[in-house]
Length: 234
Image (cartoon, rainbow, N blue to C red; front, side, top):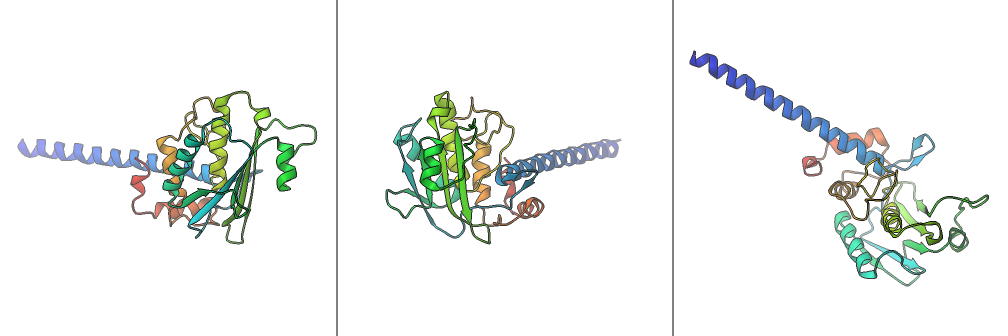
């Protein structure tokens, strides 16, 4: 009888371990899929290969126009948080040696200033726009983002777009349907700061195993090879 109960106990333990592993696997796969959606730029029905700043240790950005929707201290704190997550130095400059430009003004002025082909003919509903350049390895060489205050109705939407557009200049070019994520593609009523998962997406994007030029299938396989992947999926 004692052996019988021992067998039952062992069976229950094995079932619990199996179910836990199954749940963890589903959670991991969901996280990886969401990250791929956040990382890869959708163009029509396809997604561009992964882009980010490569071996460059220091990224310089310039603010053109008046910073809106947050104080300079709040902005510096946000940039500092992101810089720590990607493992690079990110500094503001007023010189012409910038890698990124954050433009505050109308889309028309942005188009004239940068030469970017913004779809203005017939009007546009967009309150922001972005542009980027990359080399043959899909390493970013230049990026810009425009925030047009004349097209935004609330301070919350402004904060959301400023923060999201900055992340896009770093190569996180997609989005997900997640109410509390800075990468949300549906709206921005609850998205004034980075969620825990947002931070993990950003960290993962600049992991050394995540290479520029990877397409979705290869990207997912590369992520599965990361030894400490569980640390991202907590």
